Length: 317
Image (cartoon, rainbow, N blue to C red):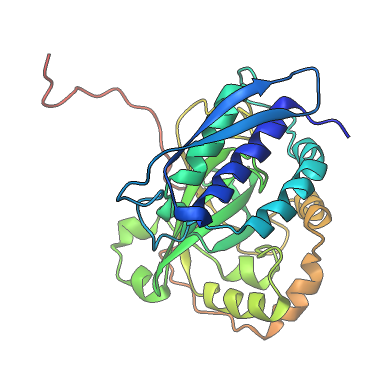
């Protein structure tokens, strides 16, 4: 199997960084010795400098430590080489963003920097949830949402939302999730921006892909009483190539027949899940009493963002 120079560069850059750290955590610089575009390999030589007082990562207790062993690197590198082209093919999207493919030069830089830098906010994300949203002022506009969430406290989660769970996924929004206790403390005007999660959980619409059934059931039981405030910064259903337009307030479904069945079937096929089976499994999760301030769109009117021309305050020219 032939590999592109970019694929090989990525694999070898990660391997070089991984191999260097158990040796003595030295600061190293990856240098390209030769890129042979007409063959299936390249040469990457790490240049090892004198050790410094600071560790390679600057924080030995960081979760993203990349302290891999020689054995692990030796095993994973050929495996990655075998499967990397297949993985890239699976990540292809129908509506790519504008621009040329990332160059080999930048791909290598990205890989090296990724291995060296600590990304604590991203590493803290512990939950992956898949569900559906609709625009607060138009239930006909429905979007699949892949949430990657951090559990900051017992009463608060924060999530970034993508259009898929692939490496080339587009960042389309954010959601804040609070407990029932926190939600009840909010002003009435603020509550209008939030939606309940009980039906999403009970119906099986909200899933945690890959999580064992027992663990997922427990997690969903906790989420059933929570509320979410969701903003989509990219109207992906109308502008799939670029984040054109302004952010929009999103809501969640609260009863049977509101979400498009085809969206659920497509999702289940991709993740290997069964929404109807999940609904039966979650039947023993109690229905919470929903605060009347949530799901304000049910009245027939709602709030939504619009562009407005305003004078600039404290302008300095």
